[in-house]
Length: 133
Image 1 (cartoon, one colour):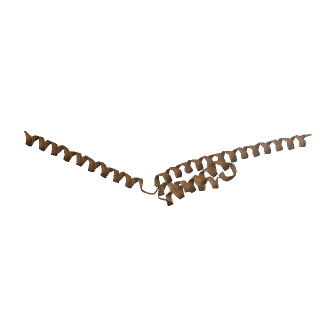
Image 2: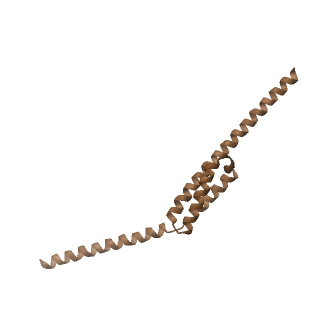
Image 3: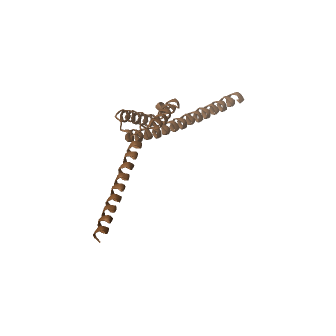
């Protein structure tokens, strides 16, 4: 009886060590993934910020553009400090702020184009009325 109890206890202890080793190994693997710089997200964000600037974001969506640029700078600092999770989060936020700025700028430009077109139509009507009289 004594031998069986000892064997079971030893087996349970060994199984516990295996589980602990597996947990520790998994933690190292996950930590390794989290420790990678978010270079792809960084490039996507940089492109989004550039697109927003090209679309007129600084003129037509100044608040959103400033937010995007500020968060992008914070992401750069976090990358430099090797705070990759924070850098990824800030880069994602900056990307979405830049996309909002780009869309807002496009909408404002379209609205301005519509306004200019309506003004042109109004001037043509006035001109045609002068010619008729």
